[in-house]
Length: 402
Image 1 (cartoon, one colour):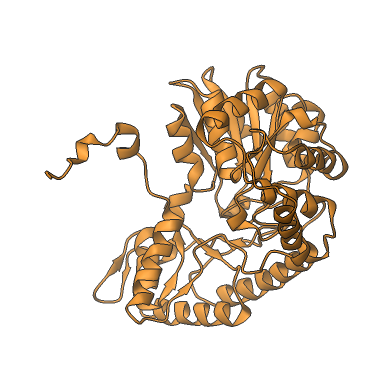
Image 2 (cartoon, rainbow, N blue to C red):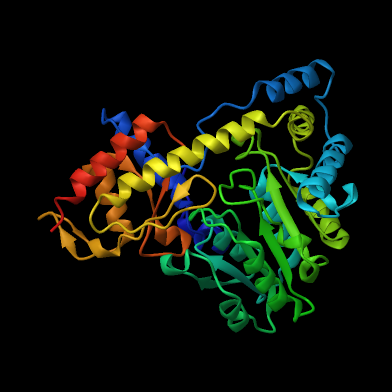
């Protein structure tokens, strides 16, 4: 058989970038397979197991026959639990009919991109941003408009910056808080300023990714959709992977204006249909059940945040903020650009991360994947021993750059 030419692949796929986090994870696995002791701090995955009561609920659901197709937007028991959670924890009024459960929050964001964007529409993304936002918007036919904030702003975009980026083509504004990759958390007054800018424009939606809601070290989580200026135009994205350590369960959800929720259901009905049945029953148990394990995980991440920051701050040329949520730290390492160990010159964050992988056997992710070329991301969802050893190796390797 004659090999297929690359040109048979669609333009949309040829123009799509590979996920940088998954790519770095694969590179780390390949090095490890060659016998190298690689410490991977690249994936945003909790190192904790799913709490027992959630797993038991899934087992019981299997025994009870929850093995069939589910309604496309989700089982009633889960949508009702999400609606109740939104109201009691976030002051958000989404009826069960306004909720769509998907195969992970990533699919939720994809559904929204397909539902809201026409060719030529613009989507403002507050940067640094989660790696997949950019490509998902492109898949939906939209143009990502990046509005950036550096470490001197704690990686948080101001209302003035947002206002300057809005055009007649703007369809929505997308951001996460707590943020992946920076760990920064937008406070109420900052969210109010952003909401007031968007309120001046009748047809712009806000997509608020709140997947790290339960990993917040600063204060009570604030949902922008609860603010008066944003109530009728906010789509709230959330899920179970981070706060409940359920990454492999692939369960995310949105609360949205009814017209948007119905559009996402229509898309999902043609792409994947409903999420797994017994998993949804377990997810309802997660929301309705004991949260002590979730709180314990947050407390563990906070201790790791403190450990990692102290150790990184001891390395010359590494500049950090103080993340208030999630399980990432996003150091600025631009002081190393132009330096060399005699064989390799570090010209940018991509080179920096490649250098650490090959010389320290530590896998991290370049900030270029997140719209911040001066930085790199460390996931501290790892043991204290791994974190200490990884940063020791990094320090030793970086000391060789002159």
